Length: 249
Image 1 (cartoon, rainbow, N blue to C red):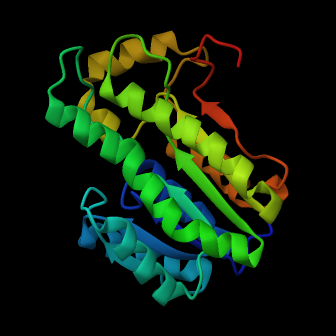
Image 2: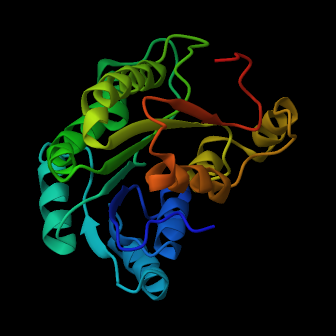
């Protein structure tokens, strides 16, 4: 399927592994010129070497910890310099180890910065140019915000969902869409670190389709939302979870 993305440009954060890597790979296959953002230079170089034949250009490498205070400015500057412009932003950097009810203040600060504040700041650096050119896409990889307990992560993801909805209404008249994807149990390196094999087996039994999802399955949805084909979809939160969520909307 041709997603009409050839020649577009995109930033993908959290690109060195898991969902971010899968999204970058599919975008490259669509002919998108990429800026890849992560902390690990070696992983980014390895990925860029593999993607260059797909997109026709070696991706711009941006080695950056998104938690740093000036991360948004540095990423935007390097991407715009390397790509010329930024048509698409995929905020895929996020997550954090699951926390309990009595999370420390430091944990709250990190969870909010990683899962909301820094995505908001980076988007703010790039959206004005998208508005000016009359076209752009922002896709945020988030997570569920319906709390089963008090949690910094749930709170941060509720914040990005509300912010994304508000932003989508402001920029829709200018050809810019803003959407969120909430992953369910996707088998990434992070999930393997956070949960034992026994825990993952139990999770799989709770998922209606009976298994963890693959990063490529979520990436296919993300690429569609990045494309001109999805121009009438904005302000949405779409779950990619094998039917795990019990709510309808």
